Length: 137
Image (cartoon, rainbow, N blue to C red):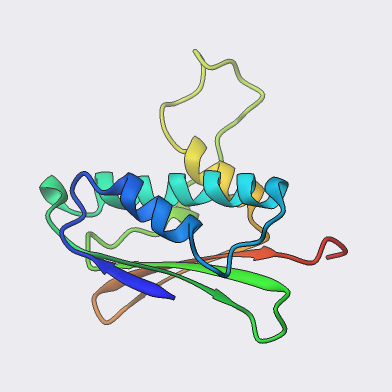
């Protein structure tokens, strides 16, 4: 399931709700909470920073792995090339006053998801977040 949002300005909530309403989403509330937080952070980053003034597009989608044990959430945009995985993790041992601003959202995604990949292909940023649906993995 995937959908193109164009333009994305002021559409963070709509994009998030679209992804969360996917039939691929698990029913387990604990998993849904983790997925929602990760989706909110990733979508918000694209909407806020990918395009000047938010005038641009975002393709958002979900997909189950062939064995049904993993959920893949993919965000694709043609905004400014940016690999969020290159951002150094914040030092969470420091107080909020001593830490640099930013980077917590990406860090949160890394902690909540089982795997995240980024690529830049054909003029597009492609971020894929993977969550294991099998509690034994």
